[in-house]
Structure formats: structure tokens, C-alpha cells
Amino acid sequence: MTGQTVPLRTVAEWQFKSEFAYRSPFADVLVEALFTSPSGRRVKQPAFYDGSATWKVRFNPGETGEWHYELKSEPPNTDLTKEGTFTVTENRSRGFLRATPGDAWGFRYESGDPAFLLGDTVYDLFGMAYNDGDVEGFLRRRVEQGFNLFRTRVSVSRFHPPAGHCEWAVRRTWPWGGSETAPRFDLFNFDWFANVDRCMRFIEKLGVGVEMIMEGWGFEFPFNHRTVFTPEWEQLWMRYLIARYDAFNALHFWTPLNEYEYYPNGDWHHKPAADRWALRVARWIKKNAPHGHIVSMHNGPVLPPFAERFAADPQAVDAIMFQTWGSRDRESGWLAAGIEEQIRQSLAGWPGSAVFAEWGYERNPELELKLPSHEFCDRGHTRRGAWRGTFSGLGIIHGFENSWSPWMILDKDQPGVADLLHVRRFFTEVVPFERVRPAAIVSSEYRAGHRPLAIATAERDVAAVYFPAGGTAHLTEPVTGTARWFDPRTGALTGAKLEDPIAISAPEGVDEHGRPLDWVLVVGNS
View (cartoon, rainbow, N blue to C red):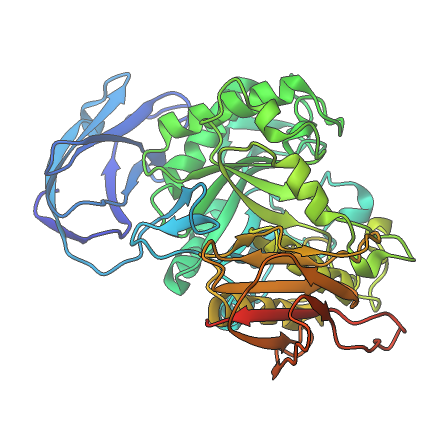
């Protein structure tokens, strides 16, 4: 196939047919395409079998000019041994999301634009689409609201603990061959992957991204049976995912396993063996996934610090999708207390990027309580957790009980969605998020969960102080410029009178539960 024209940073696809009858075309032959760029750079992309004696190659070129490709197979097959050229033309595109540790909250697009990450956790997005949920309507609404990232996993397990099982899944969502009780890990379900393809193409069209979790939870079958789901089958599975989806701009993160410490036996606690697995698999992905997407790890246990866990190979993992929930008991769940301290402790010395990727799932009291840990994750927990995460200098990904997994209510937002949109507006319109960092410029009397948090630019021309529960703070450094109060519940900005520029007292008031209100003071010339 010579003479094809491909716009820069778009997904190009080639198809090749072979009449040789493989027993398992996924496992019995290795098909790869070697691409050579106009500048001479060589990139190897695995191909994937897609049924009807057809192999496909997907590739996303990042350089204009004439490219050359060479398709090879092992064992050799003349039908799968081809050469060709194609021309890549100019195209306006942000390109891929890249990890930029220490710069712009850790992420920029290839265009150089900084990325403020606001995400939603919809673990079984692909499964919901497969079961006729209005996933396109849901995604379109989220993107219109300003969300730009979705945590989702490729496989939907029927072996999630009963309380967390997706009762909406009336259609079989097994991505392999065979069945759940008699699996064939050397075969893949074409119908399932055609559904995932449709979702990814739609997300690509919307211009946003996914964190693609390659394996669900380690307590689910097959990932909790490493004598059944052996490293060989795991490698075949990951190679297939890379072959189908690595070329998408919408692929922002490869995350090998949700709460990776479940490896290898499904026990939820920190294990050095899991750290070694994380480093090995991360390096394997980077070797076999040619587009250079971010490889991230999502934690369960928050300690030891990740710099210690991954010290043997600190460049293997690009980003931590960091999970910590803060307080979630009846008395203090609304405060989401302790998040910023845990972020600081767990990410101390970490040389890579990070996202605050989980701090609970906002409870919908109209639904049956399936997981007791969600009971007191209310709107206050959603809002304060978001501000604690962003004032730690991290992008944020939350989740809502309506849609995170067991329930599929895609047409109705929970109250905390509105509060996250105010957070986004604050950091993209009120202050320049890419320039501010956590700053030790305030002091106050310590009370668990009430301590004000501060961010500021290096030049101190912009600063902000978040009061999780009202109170008074003292500036320890001078910040000049206009002072305004930002209301986290409404997004309204009002003038602030600071009679004493050193002492700052948040406006008084309580919510409908009698709890003190949270406020943000912003000072500067932004």
C-alpha cells in the first residue's frame, strides 16, 4: 500500500490478509511493522489479528514527510511480509500527553500546552457501552463540562466482590476466548474489542483522553490466579492492547493494574514483589509500545513512599495515579482531612509526575449502599478533597456512585460535579495553574483537617489560600495585588477587604448541616 497520505498525529491503519490457517492467530505468529521516518528514526509497532484472516497495524506518525514501513512475521509468512511508503502531511494537533516532572503540574501536550487534568472514574465505561448504556451522551456532557480524562479498564469482571458487581451487565463482557470458567487466553473476543474500538474512536473525536487500565483489580479472576493467568498470557494480553490502542491520541496513560499491590495473589497490602512486577512490566510496556505514552501505577497502600519502592529503576514508571481518601467517617467525612499530608508523605522524593486520581466516590443516598466505605463521601468530601489535591499541585480525577462501576446512571449528575467545575475554572481562569506550587506562606493554629493551604508563583505575584473550614491564617510572606474571595460552592468572586495584610480571616458562615464553610482567598495580578 504505497502512496497513502496521513495527517500528522492521526491514527493510520493498514490491513493485511493471510490464507494460512493458524490454530491461534493471536499466539502462533508474531506480526510487526517497522516504520522508518523521514529523519531515519525507526519504530516497531505490533500488529493485531482482527478476524476474517486479517491482521491490522495502527500507527500514529509524529513527523511530516515520506515514511517507509516493512511488515514482517515470525514464523515467516509471505502474506504477512510487505513493504510500502506513505506521506505524512502537516496537521494542527496538540499531540500526545507527555509527563513533564517538575513542570506545569507534571503534564504537557506535545504542542507545549500545559494540561490541567480533570477526570472522572468510570471503570466499566466499555462495558456500559456494550450493554447499551448511553456512553456517548455521558462523555459528550462531561467534555462540555470541562472534564478531559477518564479512568477506565479494558476488562469487565463478573468476579468483582458481590457488592461491587455490575448488575447492569446483562451481556457477557469476557474479552478472551472460551469462558470465565474455561478460559482461552490465546484467543480474544472480536465483538468485545470492536465495542472498545468504537468507544476509543469517539473519545478521540472528542479530543480528550483515557487512562487505560490494562488489568482490573488483582482480586478478580483471572488476575488473582497467576498460575492460570501466567506471565506468558499476561504478555500476550498486553501486546494485543498495545497493538490496538497505542496509536490513539486519546490514550493518555497505560496503567498495568488497578491498585497494583494486589499482585500476585490478590492480597491488599504492600509487597516488594509487587514493586518488582511494576518496574518489570513498566519497562516491558515502554519497549513494546512505540508511541511513548505515559506509563503510570495506581496504588492501594500509600506507604512506603514511591521513591523508595521504585528506587531500583526510578525512570521505569512515569507517573503515580495516587489514591488516598482522607477522612471518611460519620463525624469528619465532609472534611476529607489528611489528604495533603498523605500526598506529601507518599510522594516525597518522587522524581516523576503524579495525579490525585482517587479520593472516594460521591455517595448517592437514593441508591442501595453497596460499599460501606462510600457512606460518608458526600458533596463536602468531594469538594474539599479536590481543593486539597489541587493545592498539593496535582491534577485530579474523582468518581461518582452513579457511574463509577456497580451502577449505570449516565444521564444524571451528582451535586459534587458542579463543585469540580468551579475548581477547574479557578485554576484555568483565575490563577495560572502551571505557574503556582504549594507554598509555605501561611501559618495558623493546627486543628486536624482545618489547616489552611497555600499556593503561589515563584515570583509571589499570585498567591491563594484555601480555608477548608473557615478560620484565620497569617501570611508569612508579603503578596501584593488585588485580594478577592472565591466561593468554592458557587464559583463567585467577590472583593476582599484585608485590613491587616498579615492576618486573614475567612468569611463566617455554616452550611445546612451546621458545618463551617470553605473559602479560597486569591491575591495578585492574575
